[in-house]
Image (tube, rainbow, N blue to C red):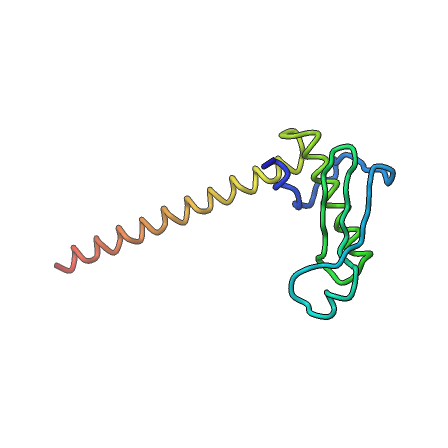
Length: 127
């Protein structure tokens, strides 16, 4: 399911809609650092899209309401990816950003080679 890993990228407005009837929501204790604030409060949101079986767990903030909102956004993107696959805007954004990152890496490598070659030429000129 590597397509679902592309979710979490914003700026997509052409996503499939979710209805509250399709969702199951639970509030559980979060995990990770935070001590008493994390261990005593049920502010982690677990959201499940029943028709597709996709589950999202969100514990990014201390606020239940903010976590509910974030979880719905992430779930909407994942459901969009699940149904549309490579035609999804989220997938296209992810591909474009990967391509941009690879191009940046390639240019950095070329610059490094150019600098290395320049230093070698300087060493030869000194001799």
